[in-house]
Length: 207
Ligand SMILES: C[S@@+](CC[C@H](N)C(=O)[O-])C[C@H]1O[C@@H](n2cnc3c(N)ncnc32)[C@H](O)[C@@H]1O
Image 1 (cartoon, helix red, strand yellow):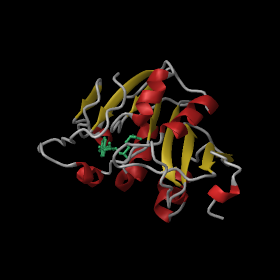
Image 2: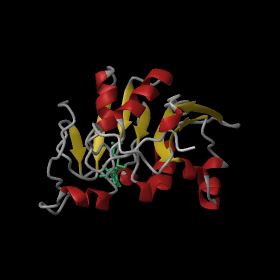
Image 3: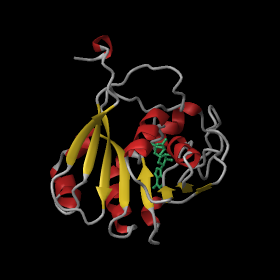
């Protein structure tokens, strides 16, 4: 796959002249590759990975560079080589023999987690980059946590930004705390919480 392409015109299905600022209409925010590299270094994965909301390829690209077979799909077109577009993950019903890793569209994150867990075999993983607030709400507790608790949650000590333009060359800080939520299908019990992205420079810290 080509390197992640930046500042490309975004072409959603059925339209052709959307501008960069409109990407967020489709809940596009890229994940910081640094967070992805941490995940790859600290979790064991199946050799087959499905990134079902690939966007500009920030997660997929890191897995490809680490030697995984990566299936890339997205509902919208971001001009990423090898990514099948027009694929609504929530309408996919085939079992995937591997692990599913993504940063889902925020307005469908609960549905993405629930659906991903249906599409993998027992013992395989669903890993999602989600705001820490994902832990809240009766709906999510009822629909996900009560039945399928995550096995591990990696909380970012120093916050990551998710970028609309996919450009991580400038660190502008972030108002949101993101975590990697790791589900291992079939796991029952209490999740382990770990911390990552620790930077001992207190000047960089919010508190
Ligand atoms: C928060 S962005 C994350 C992009 C990429 N996963 C990353 O981490 O850099 C969410 C992505 O979900 C895609 N998306 C929205 N609804 C979708 C759906 N129903 N099925 C598949 N992809 C969808 C958007 O086009 C966007 O690329």
